[in-house]
Length: 144
Image (tube, rainbow, N blue to C red; front, side, top):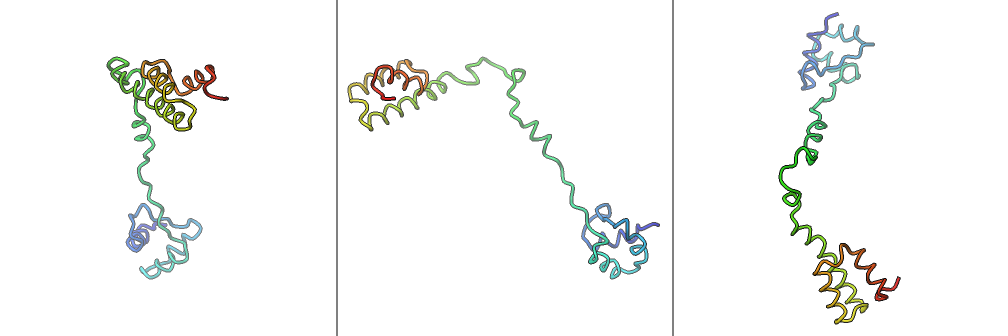
């Protein structure tokens, strides 16, 4: 049974392309019997004819490609060009200074001690907040 014309009428009614018209394989005879656009509308109401969902374009490959591509094969320039030493230093020293301010505000550090440890931090004596806290605990300044 050729349902091309019925499919075309249904596509116009549903507002979709011919390829998106789905006809229930169990009801082909009833669809074939339909002659007018009104008949097709009734079949659509009954659910014998439907519009298939839009397919769209998968973003998966684009997302994969956009995955930053930071592998060793993509790198040009020295390590310091991609992660400048200054930014690395800032990332280290800001949290240290924030922690020292916090401890001074809590009264754990006296102004003189705060200054001394602040200068140590500025000289690169501590590599992280955890390292600073470990040092303060070892010296008995920070209680466990």
